[in-house]
Image 1 (cartoon, one colour):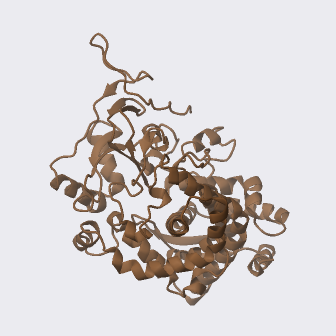
Image 2 (cartoon, helix red, strand yellow):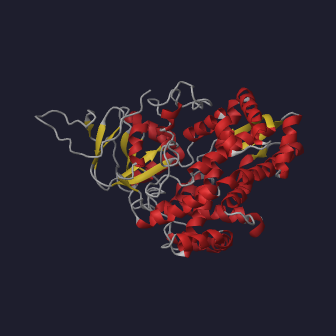
Image 3 (tube, rainbow, N blue to C red):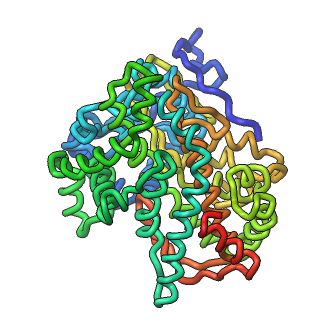
Length: 514
């Protein structure tokens, strides 16, 4: 299947002699359907539909159907009153139109990470983190240069740190199953992945040792104070949740003490990174960089793993023993060549199915479901069958799960197809990867100082692959119950079948860090 044509970046498509206006690609230019309704009341109703009456997928699908299948629409996006001054967006709901949001020459992403809502800078020590800076901001290149250098320098620490975290996490799962009942993966993932993230990025004492068992609680509380306007179904009954989380801003002073302790930990853990930046990357105040490193580690990395890994386990659980057997065979045939340990290099070279499973999970459930950006100029945005004029300054919104499940790009788009990205499977693995855009860029792209693609893109993919590989090195198969929730699925293991003796012996070596 040929990839969609690129979007046009100009709006000089005037009608000639009474004929319909056409885009440079020859598509008819139409008015953007949809609308914003009555101020205050319509955004409030749309918020309730989005969170409670319909859910995100049905919210958008119903509006697409209402407007004859158009996938570029005018809608109100939560949180609306009173947290967001202007909820109006142009929604891009297909793979082709969504690509506009990945083009930094066409959209300005200053203060758009959380969409129409901007958290208080008091949550970040008064500084604007990298994720809230537009690519054209001079500070963006300076800070991203440091973050990319850190990710590259620490990449060889990722596999050993993850191996230790995985062993501890699944020792706890095994013990819980022996004691009886099911074991919730999410709670263990929250606990062990915070230590992993900090060990992989900075080394030294992990947060659980430096700050005690409450380290995770402090980190999650800080995340909640940023993201509460976008959360749902965490407080019952829902009218109380809507009042508490979606109507008023939680005051930052309530998390000041926790954030102070987190910042103090990172000031020590990342001291070498801060010292190096002062020496080799002048122009970034040490305090500003410190708060950026906190954001990168806890919001970007830890927050991403908290959401992403349960989705991987969810899809593996639903796939069942047949896929498990294939993955176990692939992993165990490759592991001996790596000296009995699973390395990032071994996965890259020897485990095509493991790689495909992770990419497919990222396609089905991108860790960040939406992208926002303001149009830098008047432009024409193209969907598959029409084009639409967008005016300078309008907020563009893309709902990624619809874009990455676009049936005009992916066969069986709504299904989890484990071998979709295995080379030779349909002959289109690499072209399809261009439409896996979880990282704010195509999977075939590369983060740079001048773009907004995630600087830790390769590390996130590597961790997902290590998760799958370590799982089927240790276990033959497993079963789990899954409860779908808006942010992440709650996955509870009900059974785990340990691998036969040779793999178990290798697993023991991995535990010892040999």
